[in-house]
Every structure is written in structure tokens, then in C-alpha cells.
Length: 235
Ligand code: 3PG
Image 1 (tube, rainbow, N blue to C red):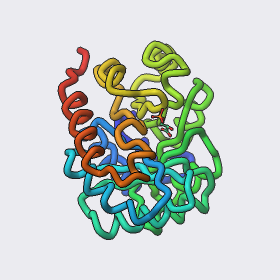
Image 2: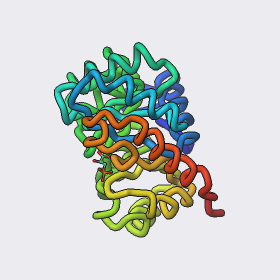
Image 3: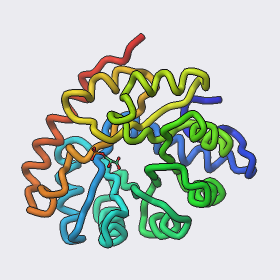
């Protein structure tokens, strides 16, 4: 199986153009190395936030469905900041995945493996990264032709030591770890070749967004980008 995106065919018959969709998102994530996990209450903050991320060198945002404003925020970023790779996070149902796509989300992330939501995305060509924390969940994802998975909550599960042991039997699976990652432990993750990008809320903390501290966010983003880009891959 190729290291990026969905396999060439899946039990649901999805492949081809859908695989290309996921592969191009994966390539952009790989280049950025970081995924800001965003919790946003006021949709008016969405565009200033996206601009701060862009100005800091990280044109990407995972807007989580943890607030009622997520859809509006995605819509505004997709419309007004076309260079930003905007995705939806904490997507739990097929309806949320569809809403996210209609609003302009280019990818969907979930904390766990919700079969109905994941199957919907695979069948409709929506790039999806379900969360895995066990070998069983990795096998669920593989059975849908997915070879890129979120690993969550990473630090509490045991970080890279656990991730390496859990994924060892499966060959070329790539991961997007998040949960407890910050500037100090980031290099340990990014140095491992199977890590595409690390997600986290430290990059743009919810209270900074709510307080409209966009220059502060831009500066924090720059620091994170410099740290992330400096990490050399092992081997
Ligand atoms: C996620 O959804 O990826 C996590 O909530 C991010 O975890 P963090 O807040 O510990 O960075």
C-alpha cells in the first residue's frame, strides 16, 4: 500500500479520484508538518485567525465541531482565505461530514473511528482521517482503504513509543498525532518518518482566539513553524 492517503481500491469500491483527493491533502499536511486544532466561539474571529495562521507561515486550520460556530467559521475561511487548507475536526456523524464539505472543508478529522461517518466520507470522496488508539481501530481504517490516521490522545496513550509498537505490524501507515503535543515534545514526533504532521491547540489556543489576540497567535505560529521545519527525519 502506498504511504499516502487511501489505498487504490477499497471494499466500497472507492479509489481513483478520491485517492488523489486525499493524497493531495496529505501532501499539503506533510509540507506544513503542523495542524492547528481550532476551537472557535465567534465566527467573526475566523478570518482574522486564518490570516494570522497564514502570516505565521502555517496556512492550515482544523476547525473543530466542538462549538456551534464551526460551520460558519469554515465557510468564511474557505471563502475569504483560499490559500488556507481548511478542515473540520471532531466530526462524528455523516451529516456533520456533509455539512463540513458543503461549507468548504477540504478534509475531515475525528477523534475516534465512527464507522458511519468514515464510510460516508470514503463513499463520497471526502478526505477523512479517523482517530485510532488501538490495533483494532487501525484495522478498521485499513479495511476502508485508509492508510493515514489520526493518533489520539497521543501523549496519554504513550506517545511515540506506543505508536511505534502499535503500528509495527502494519507496514506503511502514516499518522497525524495529537493530544498533549507542544513545542517541547514536537521534535520527538516529527523526527519519525511515519509522522506526517502533528495537531494541537497550543498553536492557536482558544482563549487567545476569543480575546482577539491575533498578533500573538501569528508569533506563536512562527515559533512552532520554525521548530517543526528544523526537525530532521530519522533514517
Ligand atoms: C485534538 O482534537 O486533536 C486535540 O484536542 C488536540 O489536543 P491538545 O488540545 O492537547 O493539543
